Image 1 (tube, rainbow, N blue to C red):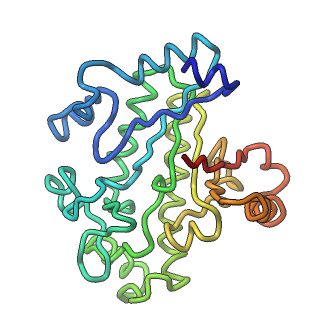
Image 2 (image 1 turned 180 degrees about the horizontal axis):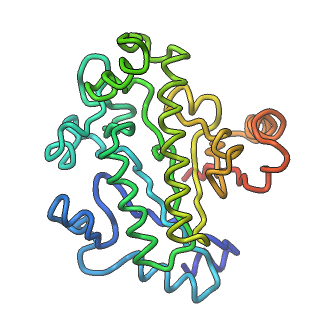
Length: 272
């Protein structure tokens, strides 16, 4: 916190949800899985300490739910979450737990999974004086290779005259339909969190558009246009200034209305 303050930073985005565990003591996790938090944080309340230290220096703290609907990293079975709730798993067209870039995924369309994530978000708002919460390129999100689990296939059939989803997970109508389900969750999440705490900032850090919609079903320009988010920090992660400028130009000229540009804070990749 001292280092960030000395660098004139005014906001810290603090990881609260990572690899299937919270980094703060969570009653939701204790009830569901018998373990309050990541064992590395068992002896102190990291989020409480960082929030207190940051507020002492007039810095904002945003609780960053980094893993979103991803439940594990490098664990093909999805880790402890999917071992307890196998019906929460997202499936690819071969029936495997959906895995992309070595992240395993819960089914972001399933109401039980959505309720679980929302319970964690609400818990942080209730328990800590944080200034906001943030989703990532995994909240709300789901890799487009997913959606072939029994629950989602049944829902698709009910809404499409009994048809099964296309084999091509990049099929535009299939992408739009699943992105629409995540849009519905974005609207619900914003509404319920604002009802609980109107002053809490609802922030998102998606990937760049339209790649994020094709790959992760994230339609964040719609979230902005519909007023379902207070700030968006798109991951404009590029390795040279010219390519960075090109992506910013797309956002400003094509993707975000002028009335919403003040809500967009462009991400910068720091490489070490």
